[in-house]
Image (tube, rainbow, N blue to C red; front, side, top):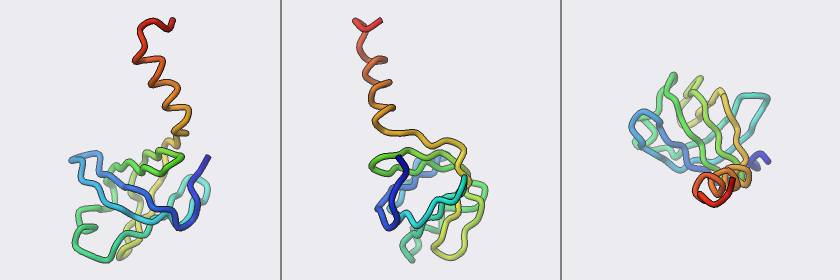
Length: 98
């Protein structure tokens, strides 16, 4: 269910929708670590920001706990399996399913 090391992900600020590609480094318990590009685009991500991390298999929702250079450490509040989300979405969008 969870992402693999060195997998490309998209991290998005929930406050304004800005998004950025990043690399999934590890998930330890409820703490996710991402490596972002070393450029000015990652400067808009700060500790305390709420974020959504999109990977091919999982959607993570959480808060940036720390940022050190190009490394983000995110405290994960929710990890949602994309296949499960797709099934729920199908039921919501099909009015003929009760």
